[in-house]
Image 1 (cartoon, rainbow, N blue to C red):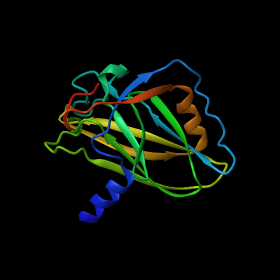
Image 2 (tube, rainbow, N blue to C red):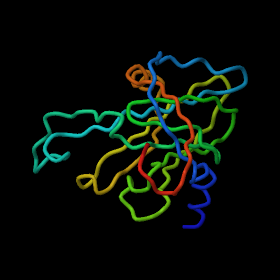
Image 3 (cartoon, helix red, strand yellow):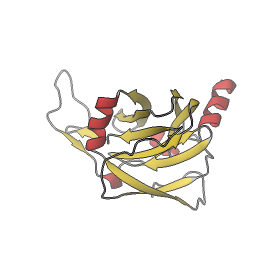
Image 4 (cartoon, rainbow, N blue to C red):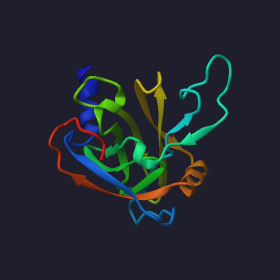
Length: 189
């Protein structure tokens, strides 16, 4: 257990850092990586919910899935190798360059309450990657509601290039900034 905590701490950033996220109008294009580096694109496809208490009842399938507006979605922090690279909030994307080699990625709800736990530290969800110079790597943050919003789950999943580009074409870039943190647990901005 302690080894898992150390791995998470090594991938994630400072747990007291908080972000304000704002969607901007702009192209969904991602520049090619600069010489000697790789590019990482992290996509959040947004939180979908179904009518009828968010989950199907019995064997029936929900008829309508809708995207929650950005203001109603949780802020998710994205970290790599012990530093936060930024944050996303519903149908957004961020991109950054990395040096070639092994990297450890982390996604984490900014607000521990989103994870449905009483802990003061949110659970981290991890992934690893080996970056090669000149390549672009796509990752998708997947999250879902479980038990009618009592619990949340996250996953950071690598994507092949073409599905990554498709999701990217439907996503918006964001700008993010750090905000003062008066308490480790506070509401999303």
